[in-house]
Length: 116
Length: 115
Image 1 (cartoon, rainbow over the protein chains, first blue to last red):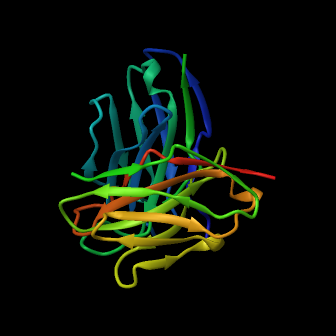
Image 2 (cartoon, rainbow over the protein chains, first blue to last red):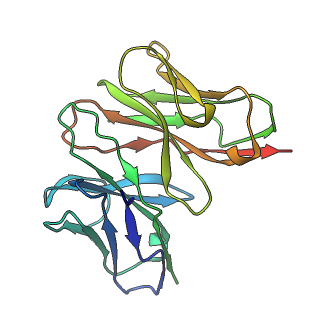
């Protein structure tokens, strides 16, 4: 089975622009979670989508948004980019979501976003 | 809310020496516990997990961890490290009866294995 795919792998934007990142989960997985990784704040949860519905949201401003399509692929969007948005954005896919069951999460390689 | 503290930000260690990475967590509810490894320019890979049962869990690449409920700790150990173990290691928790899969991570421990 192919792993989690994230595109693009690297991205350079300037302040004020917007950006869209894409994540293709493992075939058959219905949950996609997004995380932001920075040297200062570490790994922080952004949001999770399950069956096209946002399941959970982390403590990020409204400039960060996401969606999930019927094929479980997910996109996240960041509008009005700030320098502090420079980070590695990781997505993780899982067969299902919560419910007292263990659902292993498989991480993609990440998209490194640099905001100039 | 949950929080995870990794007590060492960096751990230098010589090849073939043992290593222990410390992790403490705080949670008012029951959690699953995980250790992930991140190699340069890569995503996270699951090393091992504690779900229930035996408090000593074994993972990939010769790593093991021990869950201590009274001390709310989940320390990671390897008896003999290799150069290839140079990476960053993250401890994480997830609420067992959560509505989703959200992981809460510690700050990470960079392991540098020296020849």
